[in-house]
Amino acid sequence: MKTVPFLENKVPIEASELIVREDGSIYHLQLRPEHIARKIIVVGDPNRVKIISDRFDKVEYKISGREFQTHTGYINGERLSVLSTGIGVDNIDIVLNELDAVVNIDLETKIQKKEHTELEIIRLGTSGSLQEDIPTGSYIVSDYAIGFDGMMNFYKKLYDDDEKELLDAFHQQIDYPAELPLPYIVKASDKLVKLLAPGNITGITATANGFYGPQGRKLRIEMLFPEQNKALGKFLFKGNRIANFEMETSALYGLSALLGHKAVTVCAIIANRYRKEFTKRPDLVISDLIDQTLERLTS
Image (cartoon, rainbow, N blue to C red; front, side):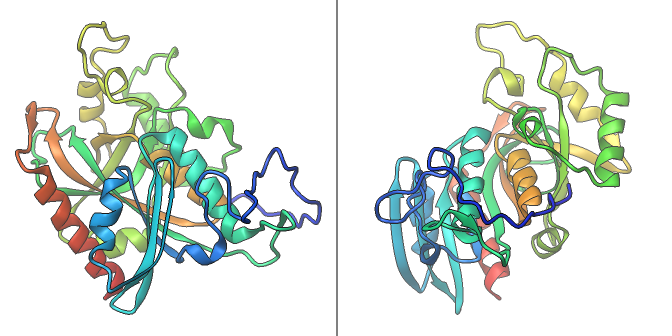
């Protein structure tokens, strides 16, 4: 997905559209420019922020607001931030827009800065595999995300040719119900995929806007598309499969691309949806993923 051309804007953004607190920080994240590094790890669980920052050599800032926890510090001489997003694409919409505003809009004048600052955003998440041969305990680097959440349909999108081709293939292979949100495709940052993919699995990640029905989990309510997961598991595009289901990556990739940032997701597979399995020690799987990612980001 292509970055939207930025127009020079010397008119302040209205107070109701860009909310800044009395201390000069952005409304939800409660961050100012000095609080964040240019490399940011995002996680869903606020408790995971401390787990990661405990590995830092030095912590400069600890900012807390609602489910959004941010710790910034240094590890191996590299400045990093880790930020919790909470669950879902709706929170990603808040996080990405506000992170971008912190670095690319003057929060005092509310005017877009002349020089664009690019962020590198790495999501570390947990996920369920849709493929029989992808075991629990493995890691998936999402080279593409397919969004079933509808979030990016509210924004003007500029697809790359390969994204268009993949989306066309999806509609050709899967009879997706018209009642559901219109799917969209976004590619990850090639640079970050190349950095984090070695030794891990790459594939297309499906993003849902819920944990139960939208991911095909049936408890007491019938599903509109009961064969969804089987259909997704059979999808194939130039050797690339839909590898896993989660709840944030499509919006992360889409907003990052439109705003001129780089993004990638690496998920620890703690469930295999095909075989109906769940790992016994997800904490160990996640801990090893954190160590691997920090080493690659700071070496």
